[in-house]
Image: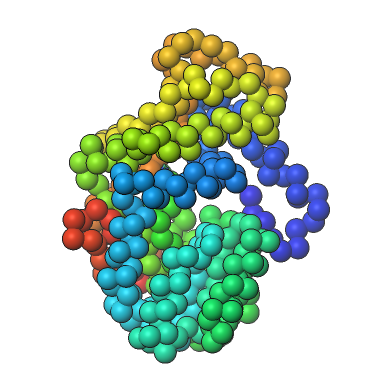
Length: 324
Ligand code: AVJ
């Protein structure tokens, strides 16, 4: 879906239609799957926030530590009076450290462009940023980052640098990840840059624990997808009968999340019946993990060259700066 500021009212029902169509298609597949983008309803977004605070889930805090430690070098990569475009900006929390660093080290930004799918929330966040950073023009854009988005009137002749933190890129398979970066490449143009947060390959135990925390927050996050389907799509999943599983798939370099039913059962979604065999799973998410070589390859496929890769002392997570 590609939202735009002045979408006709008819489009307001499109997301639900897409949700239903996507769920029916996923459950009809072999193996069964559901798209992970539907995790983030209100409850799901709050659960994800809680995941970022559990001890096993290292990515968010490790990336934040890299931004803090490398703030000056990141600001110098962004450069003088650049336009910083954050793809999937949410609450723009991660951009604040870059906005601060640019003010401190490179005399500020020509503009900050947060791009996100949720219009009303984006305006609220933009107003907060304008109050906090009165010298930075904040120019929000509503849209889905997987699609090229028409940019607002930007200050001309400025270097454009994309910002895509959080290892969101890990939710895309190799082909789509390259396509997403290619879209960013087209947006920043020749001479532009991209700052990408990506999670690194490591031992299976650390990876699986990060996606199956002892407090059960990730399990609740995974099952919330079924709660949402029950509520929004008139379905009858017995949510507690689906077990959360996190599996490191080394050959595909990804952590997979599944919901497994130990007993055979059938479930109805919008009057359609889906049969599960005992032990059958619904594959709900892939979270790809990268090596330095994989980052170089991904960048190259999208027309970028990796300039610098910053990492934490334990080598858990990477922040890559690349040039278009
Ligand atoms: C938000 C996609 C980066 O893959 O680590 C966290 C989502 N899923 N725990 C990730 C997620 C389960 C997260 N990303």
